[in-house]
Image 1 (tube, rainbow, N blue to C red):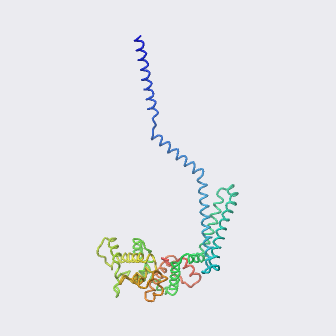
Image 2 (cartoon, rainbow, N blue to C red):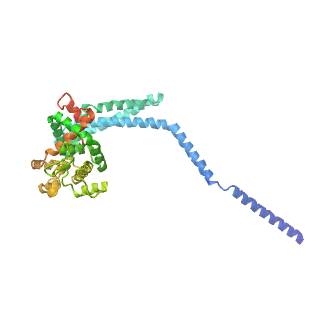
Image 3 (cartoon, helix red, strand yellow):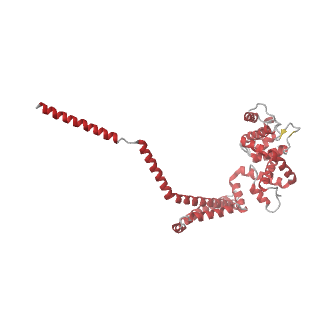
Length: 374
């Protein structure tokens, strides 16, 4: 009896042990292979992306092209319309200027909204037959708007709009620009041509200096033209070299010395001189809060007796508009000479010669090319 019970107990015990072993084997066998699962997941995601792009990519590309083209057309339309309104309703009168201009803005917004709604309606039928037709039409309309934006009419409206929103800075830019154009018109182009020829050996060096210090290379060329006419020399007032360096600010000296790895700079060395010219102008740009006209005035006056900043504090002026009455006591023609030379150098680079301002439509073409720095 006991043997029978003991045998049954051993049998049950063995069955339980075998059952446990089988369970353990199954658990081990079913243990997940993480790298394999990760690889399968990545492959699935990649296949999903490819399927999405194949299915929707062309539609997204066409829709994006259509949207970009329509936005470009809208921008050209808004600039032209607001420029025309700015010229038509210029002034400070409430009912004669401000309210009509605000009305133009309101009407323009409504017109653009209705035009967009109309576009959405008329594009449905062509898009159902030819999926890329709306994008093609939008691009063609945008090309037409782009062609219009290169013309004199759009340039005039853009100028009107800039004058409307530019405030004091735009008044400075416009006044300075026309003084420069007038100076170029009066200039002896034969002498300007000689100046351009003399500039060629120094252009690469000056552009390198401008690149190092992050200033406008064409304006920096104009500074060299105004300072030395690209005839480096020692002058009677102590100026030396291409940029007629006299007493540059300590910050500019330290900056160039660090750049060159030298404590003593040779102001007669053309490379050192160009770097000092660029660093000095950068110093005055920062001091004058990036005001081009004032920075050029400050460069010409120098740092003696506190420089232009001291004069501005003395008179209580802070910008181009407020300093105008006091310019008779300052070298007001210096920025004009710098920018006139810079304009001549740009025109020669773009046109291949120096066009006469008063001939044909040269005035408008020269104004579209623009003055460096402005």
